[in-house]
Amino acid sequence: MSTSTTLKVLSREETGRSSSRRLRKANQIPAILYGKHSDPVALAVGNKDFVKMLRSIAGRKTIIELEREGSGKALSFLQEVQRDPITDRFLHADFQEIHADEKFEVEVPVVVKGSSVGVRMHNGILEIASHSVRVRCLAKNLPGAIEVDISNLDVEDTIKVGGLPALEGVEYRDPAGQAVIAILVGEAEEAKPGDAAAS
Image (cartoon, rainbow, N blue to C red):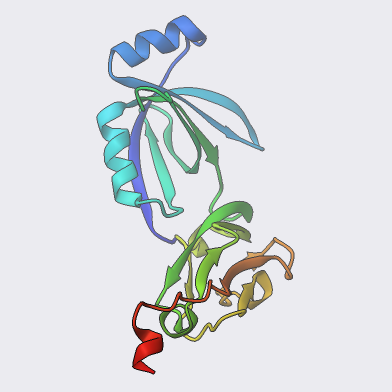
């Protein structure tokens, strides 16, 4: 399996706004685990454990093993996190269940590596058109991120989905012609005072 982390969770019977408020007051985060082969399961996650898990995955797509007392482990990935726009407090978390022997589709972040020659030498501007791409794979082949080396990109060069690195067991699901990274033409540098005189 690719990189993974473990998170302890509790099953909960009560749902609804009042139940969720009680959980948050007790430093717990309401959550749900859903999958195409099973009914949704309401969960509660300790706020401290959840924050620790988020720090460990650091924005990368990671398999999360949910440890449920009396129910064994469930493989999942974090699908969505809701936060309070004012306090930034965690309100809810959605986990999607997966199976080790079954392919699934998921959005994986794009990570830029290197420094573009077009930006360094020709006043180009780096544009990330797609911050994530959709892939299909088994859990063992899930990449934490799609790393793209832009060192050789010059002005007006573009990397599309079809030009992303080939990864074993990973199929890109977005259109091959979809732009991911581009180096745009930057504005011409203004002449500095004294340049004309110096020439």
